[in-house]
Image (cartoon, rainbow, N blue to C red; front, side, top):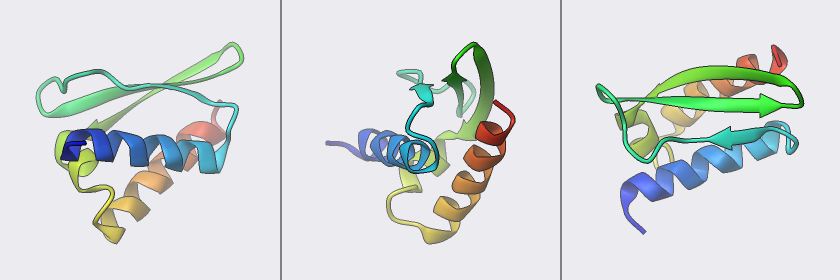
Length: 79
């Protein structure tokens, strides 16, 4: 598994840890070094942007994990 796939897997784990009912769609490739990620729960959908570097570093950098976790928590809370 390459760094990008490991990061995407870690992102999915973060979301499932916050709310297992949230469906996540992560694009295959980044656009302008950003991922536009869709979070859906029931009829509600929220889009968040996460830098490509943050996805790559997510499994190995506690600071980025904390930042991304907060972004996801805020987005899930608004669903």
